[in-house]
Length: 198
Image (cartoon, rainbow, N blue to C red):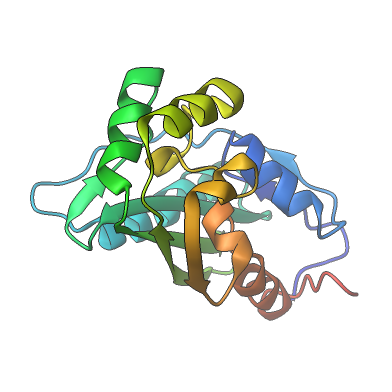
């Protein structure tokens, strides 16, 4: 069991994950894990996300053995086959939304909570299915100019105006789609001796 002084570290510089973790009301710090996030040859997106979540958590946990460290990663596929990443710019975001029109995107959000001092390691992968409605060029362009979702896989920022692009979201945890599955995380924090509700 950790002591009251055990610190909590988010192994990510994502503002989305930071904002989600802040909802739990626990004090925490943020540290970049500094790992190579490249996919391995033939690696499935769900396996990639789970591996990277664990590598992020353990990279920071090695530097802070007594801390409880949260690592998370997300990968997406179109129609369960084509890997979709963060667009990075307007043109690629437009291409992603054109491709997604009338189709389904699956998001795999992986989570690892680790503590080096006692070997605590718990992992989960949370799936979310997003169905896009048929989109026309003009609304894609209006959406991109307003939202600028260059750092969101699939370019559909569901916590913002991207919700207007969708027909349905299917999943067990709405926070998983944003980037940090809080239902799984609160379970892991309880198991690690740091329950958000005390």
